Length: 261
Image (tube, rainbow, N blue to C red):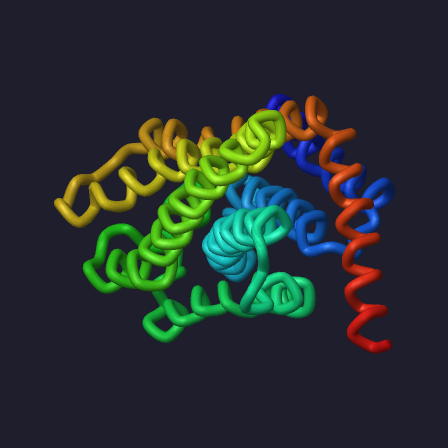
């Protein structure tokens, strides 16, 4: 249990560093902060045994697990798009839109995970974790329609965009391309690897397979591992990330001044 709390401290540390050291005036830093905050929320809501004594609290945590997980995927997707248009010409105004609405998008879109409450699908009968029911077709369909399908569409799309962006940037400046690959590229890779086991565990129920608690432990453990690796990536590239944030903030200020002038 102490190891789990240490992993949560890693996410909290990065979020605190971004809050106090970053300008938080650019979408890139705001979204990076949201990636870590949603991951922290998902880590807390995925803790075993803690919330099972209260049915209402356990149901809330099951919802928060889905809400924060989808918010995490959305944050990463917008982060990838934001980085792309900081390097490439933004001819259609993507950056101003993300700058203005990224927090609202990440906060509001995952609210589709409220829909399973209509059929009481967050009711939990497991004695270890709080999550959506796995023994009915209705709950498994909800899990797919409001969570896994959207998350994988976002992750696959953002990965394609990221790979193409890194390729284009490397054609111009290989050093910047390598930096992009070692920061945002690592975040995307870690996220996908963390999503695979829990997706497999959920889809196993479509085949009416009853997974034991040990299987779920292996399925959700990568969430906490992701928090640690995110922290290592952030610490290794912290100076470059914060410098990029400050330079982007200056550019954004000049852009806004030009628009209002």
